[in-house]
Length: 194
Image (cartoon, rainbow, N blue to C red):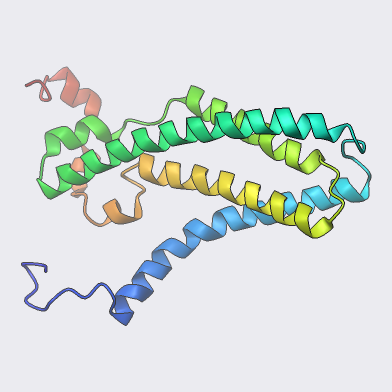
């Protein structure tokens, strides 16, 4: 219950459900659009005969794709776990009105090397799936769409959680002065020291 609102908060009210849908549909549409584009690219490659030859794809898909999928899964889990921990910390700073701690996390981002590592793993994982000669076009299409969708969804969720200034939940709750604060000036003046 919101103390500023005497009415009981109902998360299942039609108005609240509409707000949730409006906020989160774009998060699902972006990866869906990417997956549709990858599906179209796969179909184009398939119709031009660009895929591993019959029999040769088995070792590639058995060992290469399995290795990439496992490596991607482990790394993605570590990255999301780390980002989620920071997201919770930022959330607590807003609830506790703790500007000092918020500023410590506000501009922290996933390093570019992690982006590169995940991006390259994603590319090769998707490429393995797209270069496989699928006997059943529906099975191939579903696999390509699913892999592309999940990879893109992971990317967009990670970006959303990693930047409190862009987050759907945080946008409305972060005081403007916290966003406008110059972190370099604050560090220079030692305002963040204990």
